[in-house]
Length: 402
Image (cartoon, rainbow, N blue to C red; front, side):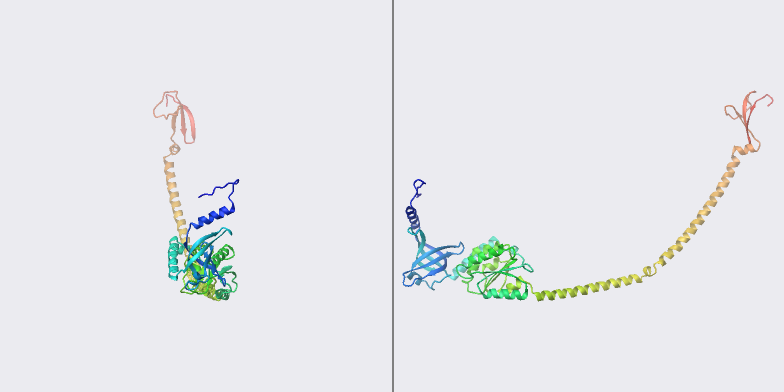
């Protein structure tokens, strides 16, 4: 039913509170699951109070219950336990507060918790959050190592001491948080996000010592797993011992078996690196010396070859051959010139003997008309003629006596 109201006719607070109480009252009793974040037992009182927290959504509800209900729980309820409460939602109009009135409390069994973790594991795996191609490579020498750990914990000491022993110059940005209990998942998640946002942090280690399966449950919370998957900074998981396997191990980029192993993975060993450099330098020096020796040997072999030891030998042989060819060419050319000259003399003699001038030299004459026609038969008297003799020409006139 919708409450009708307007600026001119607003609803009184008591009316709104009464309606809210009625709506909540219609919900009836419900089963609610959560983690006990706080338990308050008042001496001499008949009712106890606890805070029930949903770590995945970071939401808490106040629960009131008769002391007999809490005393009936087996094993006894303590902070950090996961429980299921049969409760009736209640709204107190006078205070404007909402709470649950518990009628029955049960522990969530370890078997059920592990079954839920397995279902969550399969669901996240289908999304690809555990895929190998999502894993990021750790930097060789990180500028700063982010460390999420418990307050004054042995895990923190193991990581810092072992990392400093391996690489004395390593720097840490440490976030001390709760690593067990109702607030652990939220605090670890916030610390990881803060370190991931720090540009100076190159790798993040999330660590704690060993513990029971219940103690390690915060490191399998879905909100924490998704926060790690969204990180741009490589994450190293070092939770518990070798046999412990929270879901954080699957989504992290590197899984370390112990805090000491995490320190070994994030920074190199300075002594080992120095030994490696010395060995590499020795191998490089030896390799260069062997290369120079091989090249010197090859050079000596080249210098011992006749062509390099006495290079003029090859030139001398070609000089003699060139000289012989030059002499032969000169003789051939001279002979050809002589033969050509003799032929020219003979040709000149033949040409001279056959030329008209030779005939004129022997006393003959060539008679032509004025038109240049050679006279070969008698011409009419009075014809003007041109007479060519060996020493020149003259004119004549044909007469009858001729």
